[in-house]
Amino acid sequence: MSASSEHAAPAPDARARGALDGLRVIDLSRVLAGPLCTQMLADQGADVIKVEPPGGDDTRALGPPVNADGDAAYFTAVNRGKRAIGLDLSQAAGRDILLALLEDADVLVENFIPGTMARWGLDYEANLKRRFPHLIYCSISGFGDDGPLGGLPGYDAILQAMCGLMSVNGDPASGPTRIGIPIVDHLTGYTAQSGILLALYHRARTGQGQRVEVTLFDTALSLLVPHAANWMHTQRPPALLGSAHPNIAPYDSFACQDGAIFLGIVNDRQFRRFCDYAGLAALLEDERFSTNRSRLEHRDALRGAIEEALSSRPRAAVCGDLMRLGVPAGAVNSVPEAFEQAHTAHRGMRIDRDGYHGIGTPVRLSRAPARVDRLPPAYAQHTVEVLREAGLDDSQIAALREQGVLPRWPPPQQ
Image 1 (tube, rainbow, N blue to C red):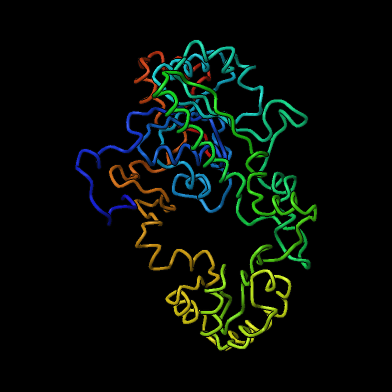
Image 2: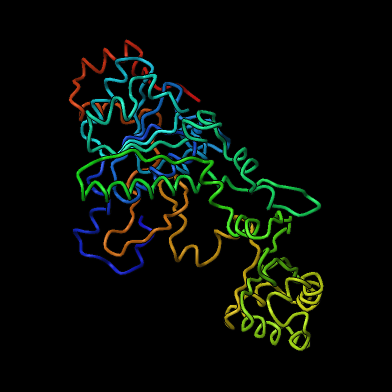
């Protein structure tokens, strides 16, 4: 059920293989940033083996809602396309299995608290680099392993607070507000994916693997565009503007007859077209609104005029008319409304398959389109399969179960 099924069909052999076909990824990560990164690699054809501790990924329990296996919808959102095994890495025999899996692996992704892998004798520089010189080792953490905050745990909302994101989100009435999605975790996942792909390209040229380091702290700070640049140039801290933009006006939400829309007018040409459409031609003769700079200085008066003009008009008609005129405008939709849009279906951005419901992949390759071949795995679902591939026989697997290195069967219930 590829999101790109309605687009130009590549050659059959390319369609059968994703862009990352043949790449093996060992995923030791849990919760969001790491699993999202590895899910994106899986969507593009990588063989991702998710290694979970005896209790499973914490995200499996972050429900309801839950699926038929009892796993939280949250878990299913970032773990499709993977094979899952259960493994206790705190035991030496468990670490031996991991080392066996790394023999054929290209990438390892982990987001343990810094120092954990070193404590287990799995530090990249000290232990893994010489043994696996081709390995791309991706470490995701809150703050990195050194510096004033090095080694401390990091969580999305805490980083939003510490790195200034909350300070520019909200309005004077609400005060600083957490952004409603875990945006730092999300972008960290994408940043990790980018780092891995850069390292793979470097390896293709040099034959050498390397360590990729990504932190929530760095990622959160990188999101402060243009607010950080504005402050660096003026020394004036950004103010809370609600949905408005600090550098552009009108660039904000406005009330229509049946709900809010967002206008994104970024130049004088668009502003003239909007005013002609909305019956606000008088604004074009008013020096307070002649340029973006002057509109910013008089944003409150401009807002009042726009809302008065739009308050009696239905938002669907306004948005449709303005977009056809080349003036960016969109309804402020709820999550259900966003996924009920006809264009969402056209773009294949919702996946419903065999009881799985998920968001489609936003990356499209014309010759190697993304595929969803595996649904999110049940806990330890592929343990025997993966260990047999690593050369273990059934008696060895049974012995590891008896030792508690592998989860006993059936797996624990959440």
